[in-house]
Amino acid sequence: QVQLVESGGGLVQPGGSLRLSCAASGFTFSWYAMSWYRQAPGKERDLVAAITRTGGITNYVDSVKGRFTISRDNAKNTVYLQMNSLKPEDTAVYYCKAGRGDNDYWGQGTQVTVSS
Image 1 (cartoon, rainbow, N blue to C red):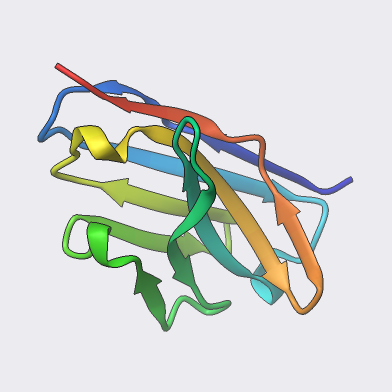
Image 2: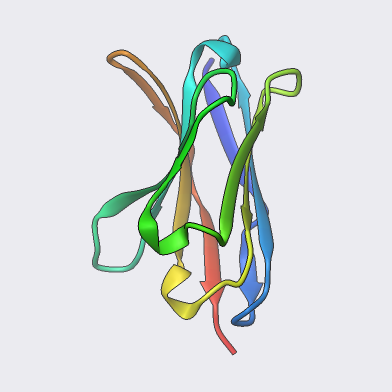
């Protein structure tokens, strides 16, 4: 059974940091590119960051460049999103996705709220 379980979300003040984790099981993790998406209330789900199967290439949406870092540990079947200098506009539900060709798997999401 395929599972992607996100954790690490919560309430943080502006300027603070959070580290999201997404633990994968039920498929060969190292075969899949991984990405993080987010969805704010009333908005579409948007790509935040992506990482290739080996971790050699990463990409970020412009709004998080220099603040967020995506990484993966294929030995632990886990992808991470380190989020620094958080802003209120980063508030959203964050989802991880595993992608390979036409095969996509999604996690259930974790809430990140940036507020004073």
